[in-house]
Image 1 (cartoon, rainbow, N blue to C red):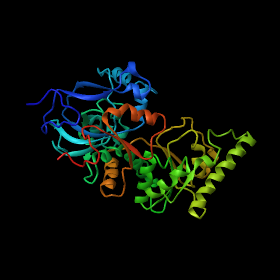
Image 2 (cartoon, helix red, strand yellow):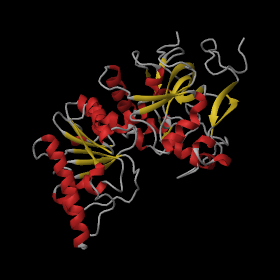
Image 3 (cartoon, helix red, strand yellow):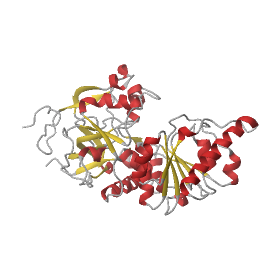
Image 4 (tube, rainbow, N blue to C red):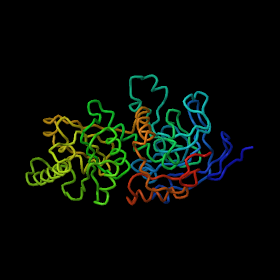
Length: 414
């Protein structure tokens, strides 16, 4: 007979769903520093719909989106969902997970109870996607990021996901390793594989900002697996060797340059000249690594405001700057003379569809991409690890939280 609630790490009989579960919740009255916003509470296990899957969470990944959720900025995720008609006055975050399929809706065909899975964070309305078969579901009005824009994320004993979000867990990985790579990995995979003639190719020079971070560590390995020549941009010399071990042919310390920020006005000769000197020096650093005057065909961007002017300048003729965020700000500026005369592309990108999520998972399963797990936390430390990320004190690569997998290194429940 099922108990009403099980302790973290206590395993019910396969498929037996208790009434209650432990979860780390954010509530609007606690918006602020993550160490205070996240608090463990006992709540009902979510009900699932016809195409939903209930997953027994073994481990969860850590991403900056739930730092935003904890702070309540740039939006209140709780208020946004309540405005859309949802009733819950709390947020369960977590946009990466590994776990076991515990219950499936009556229309689910792709997974079964007992399957070990990783979960990607792209969700959309099945009916809308079916009505628009020629449209990438990423462009559906209903597209949302699970565990940030939707509730019932992975910082709980059980999570509710859509069936298409589930992919096979790589058998050689521990639960925590399997939980940490999908969001950043699938995002990077789409950026490098989606955009027509600018799909990464053999021998392409790819400039990767934040090479030692979660996104950058994935992008380096994806580019290398395709036969490209990734060059990382980092913030300290001690990160250079880390990037090289992942497959970068070299790395540039951005702190050796001081021309960052929004582009000066082209009529301000002195300021523009200073910026141009810095941008050219940065471009030369790329050439020095390569040993020849070849510029990046793809620039992998996410800092935004501070770096886009230089990214646009150093990108090769006919190349692409592809961007998925704006961590230094959103007012990106370009010198359009270099942009149109050199026929460059500036491309926005956001997470990934099912095919692209499978693409990164296949590379991990083949051993061509490592999850780059750098630190593992206990479930009770959910707020603390987000606080470390908020303060930019987190280590290279990716982090994970043990949920029902209470010991590091475990690869299977059985």
